[in-house]
Length: 344
Image (tube, rainbow, N blue to C red; front, side, top):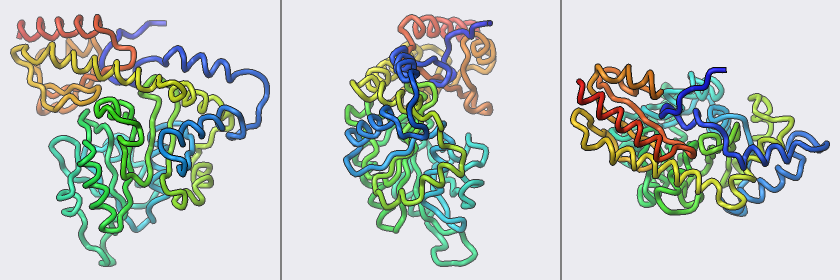
């Protein structure tokens, strides 16, 4: 089988951490009860409460789209709406799944850096009580954002206060919450402070398939087990999903993985920032670098090093580093970028 070159397309492109694979292998012994009634799931629930608070209710699912769609199903009715950035994964990369499964509407707000603000949220709250308008019910933010930027604690607090003041719930898409926590030098719980519901991802941080929905208010979780089942997100052999969370949370592997990914993004940005023809377009807070390149160099570089063009019209590309990205990977790629730009 042909091996794909180590590149910068996505942290989904990297493999699983060996300790995660070992945990799944360890769980692959004997018979245990299915659907989460097993020791690994019990331990994973304990660790989630340690990270996010003793009151949280956690439900493990297969993927990020499933986590977001089911979380939003628990928060809105079909005539209600979710305010989110236009760049949000739920708006751009989930094939309309949140709207299909909730029956509600996404109110996408343009932002320069992927981050909502209280003013942007309040500007989207219109038509309240008007029967012809979808009723705003949820604010959804991504931490860290799809642009690799991170909400600071004061920003999180202001957004939560704004949402709750208007009677809205706050949902956090935490597919890269670990990277945000490392960037902020804080706990996982602090990185999503104020959230009512969290989609907490592990897949992008060294797992195989491991996502979860975390309810900070147990009342919101009422009936969610049926939502998860009906949405085809209930794993029969749950121990394999749960074992991945145990491996990541038990002794801080989640943090070590995210630290490497963030450090490699910072290094990449440092190496290419001064290259003539390269313009970094966003703050490099977590593990993503966005840059504008000369148009003629993008396709050849992407073919060799595997990355996505983010905005074709602006010649903007996205480079994502992973738990297993090495200094050598970054240095080799930075040299290639410099050489390509010099040739252009």
